[in-house]
Image (tube, rainbow, N blue to C red; front, side):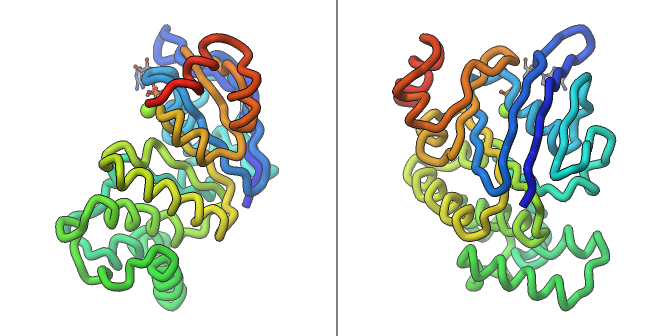
Length: 238
Ligand code: ADP
Ligand code: MG
């Protein structure tokens, strides 16, 4: 687990500013949700924490290291995306093992980590199957398995449930929370769905147009929104 400190981080693509000096502190083991309408800069911020996007100004620290110039592989994070990006020609087991093999991890360690992830996610019956032979929920679990096996300091989720139907979304929400309660890995979770934010977060960061409108615990935002945007966004059903 690690603390993540995002300090006055800004991002411009060419001359277009998409994030304006955003600061967020995430404590060890905390589950923080970045929420806000499409285009407000959630993915860009998450991708900067992951190292997939450069930082225009400001600093991002993970643990006691400033990581601005570290490549993604050296940041000790694992990211889960909405489109899973599983390898179609690899089995469930191979999909989970692949990132560790790339890093030349000891095969005994790979086997043990894959087994642990399969146990946690109830994937044991499906280890020899290919992604096309799985349901949407099972694929999402494999994508999480690939993140878990790496034992990261920080999990990053970018709208991991948005391709699932409503019923499965509710179920996976619960599973992700249970996973967090079990592993206590520091998590940054991006969504445009306020119900996901309200039910999953220890702390919610509400964003609009590249700025942070309010940060607080779910009930705090619900009871004491700082403005009409937050009130409307948090209070309205998706
Ligand atoms: P969100 O995830 O909240 O929907 P994004 O972080 O994806 O928002 O995008 C924020 C803004 O940055 C949007 O206006 C988007 O069009 C713009 N943007 C994102 N990536 C790029 C890029 N690679 N080049 C130019 N503009 C981008
Ligand atoms: Mg996005």
